[in-house]
Image (cartoon, rainbow, N blue to C red; front, top):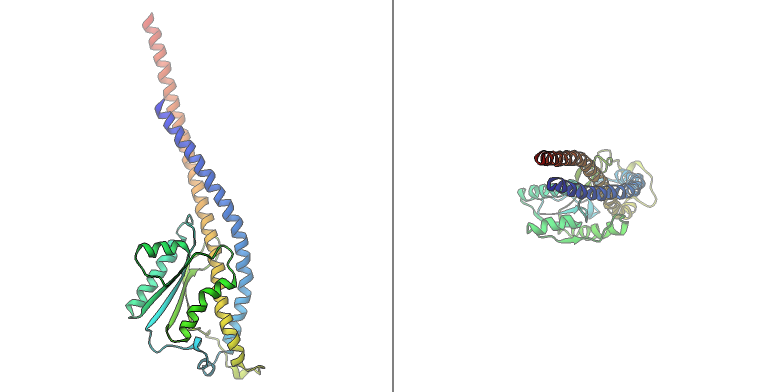
Length: 286
């Protein structure tokens, strides 16, 4: 009977775990819907900003704006890493951390000094454990990031870049393709990179002039780039957590089937043994 009791305890434990993972899966599904709505709402605006900046860009105007400055030598670069504050999201955080470490190693191998900025408790915990110095550690950005959150992240880095203290700023975050596909990506935020289809401002008649328009748009463009990455990262986190919890729930179901069969076999063996003992005892009395 001891074997059956042990199996029964395991069944109860797995049932409790399954109930927990199923609840977390439902919560993540609910949050994922709201997060994807924010992603789909942000993308058209980001695309329009990108098109305008690419259209206005010219080599002449690039000389007037520090955020467009191309350094002659990469001396110091910053890496801004976005991770989650919580775990239980599969390899979501691990993939982002690995991508950030890879970029830091590449920059250092090229002879550049680096500084690390991390938003997200999981990233902070990892680099703190490894003894990696961090210039910024943020844990106050939740599941519904705002443009103010984005500005608070990119504003100090933009100021340092404009002053010449930084030669490049890279952003490591997740690209939200679907709930099942959220690969990490590295984006060079500074200097701002115009697209290959950038047109000359001489083609347009603008009022006010192009430099005035760019002066207002470039800070907005940078802030929106970070905001879009924040909302995509939040959606990717919920998608990864839902997938991880669904897999855990499915695994718990399979384990319950196995344990139930084991319990039935153990119980059947115990009953058979008890019957044999009764029969043996009756035969002994005869």
